[in-house]
Amino acid sequence: QEQLVESGGGLVQPGGSLRLSCSGSIHVFDNYAMGWFRQAPGKEREFVATINWSGDIRDYTESVKGRFTISRDNAKNTLTLQMNSLKPEDTAVYYCATRVYGTISSNRFDYRYWGQGTQVTVSS
Image (cartoon, rainbow, N blue to C red; front, side, top):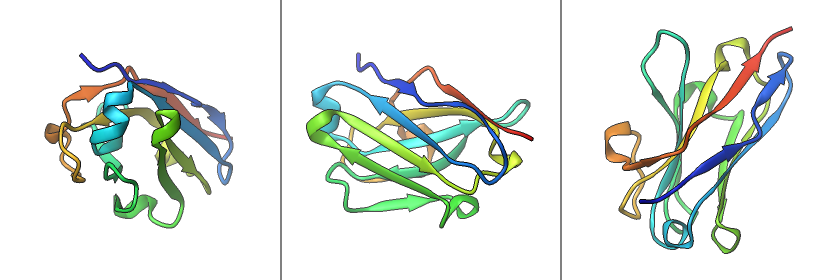
């Protein structure tokens, strides 16, 4: 059972920035694609960003392109989501997740292991 732990959430004003981190086991970071998803109250969990096992292929949902950046440091077993120009509609619980394959996916059902989530609130 892989364990993922998110950190870095919080309250930020519109236009501000936050950096989310996710840590996991060496096995995850040596082999698997990973992603960030988010879930707002009353809504389905939705795709935010994904990155392949080596870190050279990324994909984003349209609403965050140009504002969010996903990256990974396999040597430090860390996945990061840098979020800039935050908007109130970015408010949600953010989850990191891992596949059991090295290729990216935007489908949440392709991800096997999930963290517990970290709350991001964008409000003035």
